[in-house]
Every structure is written in C-alpha cells, then in structure tokens.
Image (cartoon, rainbow, N blue to C red; front, side, top):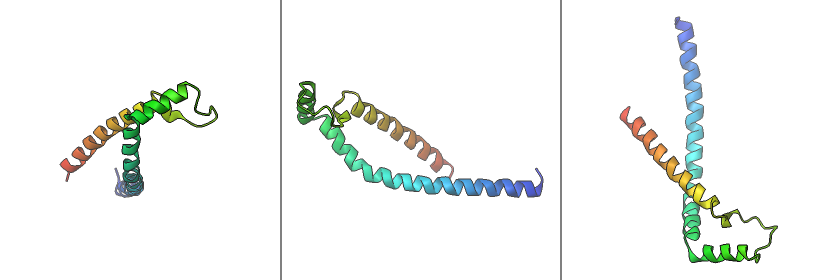
Length: 101
C-alpha cells in the first residue's frame, strides 16, 4: 500500500471508528436509562399482578383495542431472554477490549 493510500485508509478508519464510538456512547446512555424500567417490567411479569392481568385479558375484561403485548406469554419473556444474551455478548466484547489495553 502506498503512503497516500495508507494515510487515506487510516483516516477512513479513524472517521468510522469515531462515529461508531459516539453512537455506542449514546446507546449506552439510553441503555442505562432503560435498565430500571426493564427491571420494573421483569418484576411485573413475575408477579401475581401480571397473572391476574393475563387472566382478565383471557376472560375478555381488557379492551381489545388496547395495546397489551405485555400480557402475551412470550413478548416479555423473549425480550428478557434476548437482553440476557446481549449482556453476555457485551461482557465478551468488553473483556476482549480490555485485553488489548
């Protein structure tokens, strides 16, 4: 690779890396903000209150035109499972990044 090509290539890496790192910082901020709410959702999903809300929905007591995906048996479970997988992947990425410092 010639000098000018190399410099251009490295400049492109710098620009892309800077953009991705700034986007990651923003995403991490949003993630930190939502974690408390996610814990609240998990506590609700595991509670007797959710079971009663689910039973009432099954009995037709919850308006059919109301958004109520939280009462499906899979929506919250799938989100929490995906979150757990993502946390494991994040831990792996962080571990790899620290090993290069």
